[in-house]
Length: 272
Image 1 (cartoon, rainbow, N blue to C red):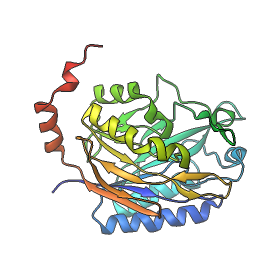
Image 2 (spheres, one colour):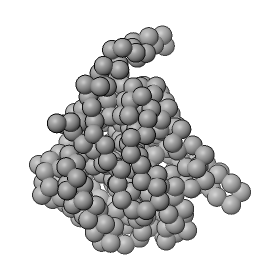
Image 3 (cartoon, helix red, strand yellow):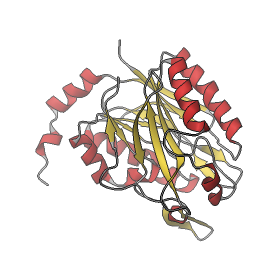
Image 4 (cartoon, rainbow, N blue to C red):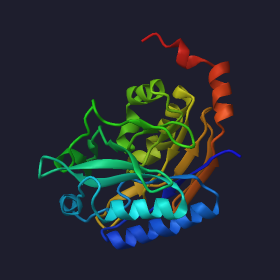
C-alpha cells in the first residue's frame, strides 16, 4: 500500500486556541482518510493582527504549548506532521525564527528547518511586506533541510523559498523526493505564480510537492491565495483544495518516482 500525504488548508487568525482547534479537527479528518503524513500551512498557529505580536508567542526549543500540542497530536494519531511554521525564539530579542518542525508518529520532533528566504517585497503600491522586520533568516549552514520519513526523504522549505530553485537542487542532491512547502502566499502573487512555481520545482527535480496554504482574508486584512495542492513528479496536480478550509490528499508512489528518474535521468545530466 502506497503512503498517503495531505496538505492542510486553513484561515488562521490571532487566536491560537481557535487555530489549534481547527488543526485538531483537520488532523482527525486526515487520519480517517488513511493519511500517514500531513503538512500544515505557514503561520498555522498564529496569524496576528500585528506582525510584532509573534514575539510574545515565540517558543523555546522543546518547550511551549504549540510544540506540546503537535507532539501529542502526532502520537495520538500515529501521524507524521510537518508543522510549518511557528515563531521560535532567537538570540535577537526583537526577532523570531519561522521554524518548520517535523514530528514522527510517536510524537518526537525529528527535524527543524528555519525559513531562509524572507519576503521583503513591494507587491503593489498599496501592498508591501517586510518579514525581516520581525523574522531572523535561518542559516545557510547548519539548517536542517531534509529528513527521512515513511513517504521518502522530505525536503523542507517554506513559502517564499519556492522562488529559489537552487535550494531545491540542494534538496534533490540530499536525496529528497518529496518537497514540503507550507505557505501563506498573498492573493496577488498566488494568482500569478503559485501553481507554476510549485509545478516547476516538481518537474525540475522529478519530485512530489506537498504545498499547504493559508486561504482567505485574515484579521490583519491580509488576503492569502489558498489552492493547497499535491503535485506529482511529472508536474501534474494530483489533488487541490481551492478556497475553503480542508485538505488535498494524494498517494506517494515512490516506485513510479524512481522509474521516472531512471528513464528520464535529467538530474544526472547536470553540468553546473
